[in-house]
Length: 206
Image (cartoon, rainbow, N blue to C red; front, side, top):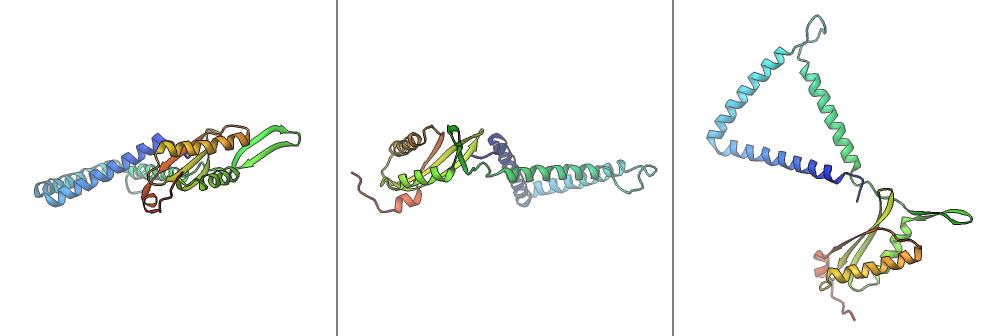
């Protein structure tokens, strides 16, 4: 739940993973198989010769620009700068989406608008879930999704508690908070077990 486009995020991770995997496999083949090593050496030599010829063929005309070298370097520099800008923008967008404002009630009172902070919901829901012996831990956070506040409730269940029971517990708490607030908020519930649930001392539930 953040402002990063999920599809673009997955495509980027897939491309980076594919590039790393291809590079690693190529280096392993070059290091282990002599025939591949010889082919790689020949291909590298041919590639260097062709690149040198290309750079020489794309040199700046001396009567236009008094600079020695190829204009392809400027294109490569611009492409590198563009790639860096894209990566920086992508990294800065990671993890965004959290909001400190839960909801603004306009026109509900004669005094004006009422702003409810996210901490109100987070503390109230966490405190209600802490009192449930079926759960080991809980954490509530608030995100801004499509111009609307949404809650993310992450809980860790004790051993023997089914996801259905855990979701019913969270739904009861969320329903009570919605009734207290007077409106219904969208929520994402994340249920997990993990090491802490297996090692925590079991509590008998009536």
